[in-house]
Image (cartoon, helix red, strand yellow):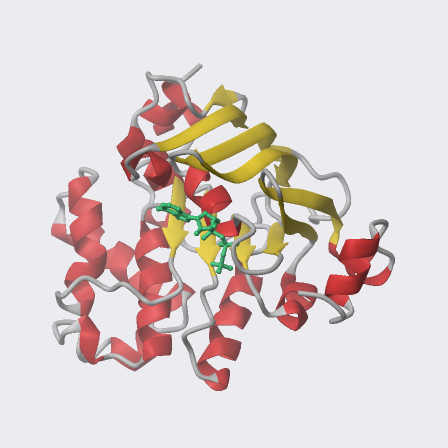
Length: 289
Ligand SMILES: Nc1ncnc2c1ncn2[C@@H]1O[C@H](COP(=O)(O)OP(=O)(O)OP(=O)(O)O)[C@@H](O)[C@H]1O
């Protein structure tokens, strides 16, 4: 079953059809009707050395939906995201236990191809992280690393993803200019384009708007909204209004004695309007945190 990570063609996708890489048709039904779990997390615990950071977190991430993770600083939201594409493998003395299933496959199975996993589950960071290369090369490089060689296919893909993130008209005349000459908001959209170019199934976003000015932040937020139904998005945000605007589901984390834990998870409207737990109520109403 781990072939899912290793051979995407077995998943029924055409590797050569450029149109498959645009935002294109919805890949899932309306997110709130009949949600289908894509990632199932059960009893996930994590510690750095002896220091616990997450304690027995269980939740489902639904296909085509936007899931927001909220909670105060240090409650383990970033650590949780890092587990989902196994960035935690790269942290010395980081210990993870529990079960995570991605499309029914064990995420921790030693047979999982990490490079392909990270293509399927991409990560966008708080601070835009373009490579110190041209705009074009930022997208081309990972595509080449994943085996795309034909220049016309590369050019098509670059144009498509830049259109998908609304950047094409702004950069089409300067594709060979350094990516770092772009504004912060443009750099973040380029990073999203770079992730989308690899046609991921899931995009993990760690406070993707928090380093941006309000206008750029709104543009990136609109872009994230446009991904709904086409990609599965898990976003960490301290901006509760943003979580409320964009998410279908929300998980509220809190720090307790044994590390961060998930206090409550549910549909976004329920978490914000009729939370079950008193802590959630206090946090979303701004009385705690
Ligand atoms: N690489 C690391 N080594 C040691 N401890 C770490 C490491 N990364 C995170 N931690 C600790 O784990 C706990 C959870 O951190 P994490 O960054 O996951 O929380 P967070 O909710 O994302 O916080 P923030 O909202 O401030 O980004 C914190 O106590 C943090 O200091």
